[in-house]
Length: 431
Ligand SMILES: NC(=O)c1ccc[n+]([C@@H]2O[C@H](COP(=O)([O-])OP(=O)(O)OC[C@H]3O[C@@H](n4cnc5c(N)ncnc54)[C@H](O)[C@@H]3O)[C@@H](O)[C@H]2O)c1
Image (cartoon, rainbow, N blue to C red; front, top):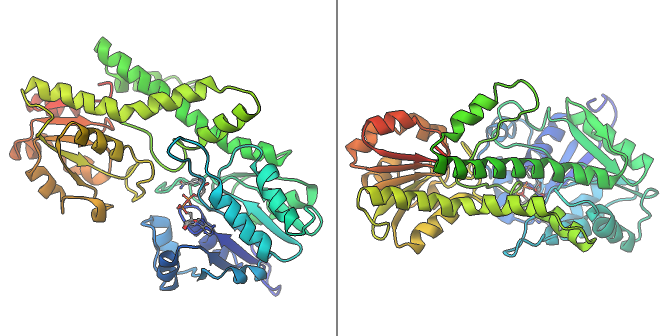
């Protein structure tokens, strides 16, 4: 339901203009809301004020120019908002402990400037309990009575950057609140911007738990196939073929594939939020911890595969020129957060390999200027990201032309037989 004609448009403020907040701001604008985007990153705001997207994303590149909104780093602008959406990061620190600093800071800003009667929705991924134990007290301390003069809700974001089919316009959502009025307000807002089901959860904790369950489900399933990859490698079975075989079963199986690591701001991070919160209440999440351990071990395993492959052509890892293909954590995007590429590079450097990198989406952080330049100086390759450009270009003939003897396919995305037939040592993850 878009804003009705003749009525003054409600104002939506989005705090945190990243992969989550930006598409939301654009979508709310498209649906007739007055939109204010607030971010503490001045560079981002400066780019947005020029109508440029700070993120390389097809949806934003297509929609941002048509639905420009007011981008600001002035928190006072939030006073105009009827609805405030908090979309700030929820990272973990180097010891994997949840870091709620951005959520606390954003909630404090919202509580300082929100007007009476506003709806404030936390979209950031959090463990069950954060809305109640962290966010609500901030608003109470600022003098609000929740459910009376401020409405708090949680609607965990599910966006999948780079996804051509599912985006902010059509991904179904779940919402939870502390009270019936907050739930209704949140439901109606999301129903006005999303063409998909908006499921009302019975409590805000349930809504928080939904998102952590979704991403932990992914993490555990990926850990399972990563373990299978390592086992099947020993047994001489191609794990990709087996998973594709199992996927012919039309029920009770969902294909997940192994890789050189799990990256992104969600899957390798979110399970720690539940692990830590459950621990505080006396529960030990063994399964989630093992999944994290297995997935965190994959970059080291990948470099071990390279070491073994180099041994067969009598090359030591020490001093060998290794080209790393891709820095992004997944295909066709420019997001490097938690990317296994950096763990792979760290391992290679630890063994004194001469490392060069190239990512067509992240040229500023690549050491080589082009794919060709990278291939020219490489004796071996590790493919970390299955960018379309790599899949289309990397052929056995091209590797032979550059005298490259070994390739580790960290995403199992290349034609294994073609490389082997050409006399190149090909090794995938479990194949
Ligand atoms: N990226 C994804 O694919 C994805 C998908 C679903 C859910 N999420 C969740 O959504 C949340 C946001 O993720 P993201 O990927 O958009 O992060 P991001 O890093 O891309 O963007 C967050 C933005 O918030 C800004 N920010 C940080 N603290 C702030 C503050 N106090 N006030 C104002 N702005 C502030 C940052 O400058 C940044 O621009 C996280 O909880 C994440 O887990 C992310």
